[in-house]
Amino acid sequence: MRFGPELIERLLGYLVSEITGCLGAGLHTERRLVRAVGGTERLDQAQWELGVGPVIDAAGDEDVVRTADLAGDRRWPELAGLTGADGVGVVAVPGSWDENGPVLLTVYLDHEPKEDDLRVIERVEPVLATAAAVVEFCADEVVRADQMVTMVQHRRVIEQAKGLVMAASGVHSGTAFQTLVRASQHFNVKLNELATALVEQVGGAPVTEQEPEAGPGTAAPGRRAREAAERTWLALRR
Image (cartoon, rainbow, N blue to C red; front, side, top):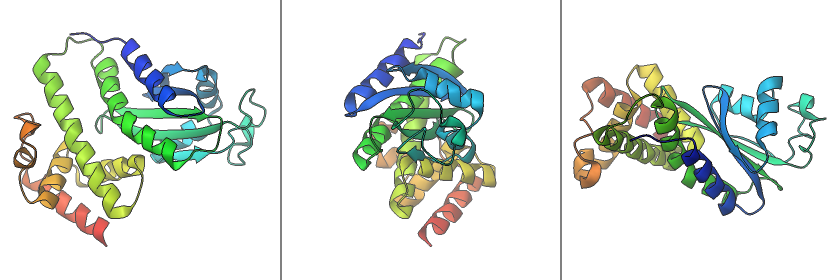
């Protein structure tokens, strides 16, 4: 089966429709804009060209970046004269399919970002990341059904692990994801293995028992991943 960028555009359109006062949204991979809706594409592109703004900071710091006024924020004086940026609120959310697939979501608002806006973004971002994985990272391949199932299963477990990090440390979804990414890099284990080990440690049972629909694509984590999960969880609980 083959998927086109129209899938991402439809999902971005849905996100915009779900947030009151949303001016547009964009999805970026590999430090480039893949797709944008709502007429805010030039705001995304301007930030990449100038090398400043919430897009750049979110991509570099691997954390959620928010602003109530893109043109008036003192962090980026270079954007002060950017046409159409006055009074525009922005949320830039870094995420990924896994440690090898960077994804950045930008959402533009006619108001300062609110918690309700973030909740909608956190609900839709995993689906956009999944679409990005299929469209971008498998663009030149015919993806088999079993590969797609495995990809979705991995993402499901990563989302569960993100939820655990959010509950333990009180952070937002993007920060929770980057906590997992940094831990996987620090301990040199794959992200999906670390996520699986963390879910199993906290849940006290294999993922396949906690969630029967997980299926055979969810492999049992190795010793290194289990040790990494234990140490990560201890650090989060301090």
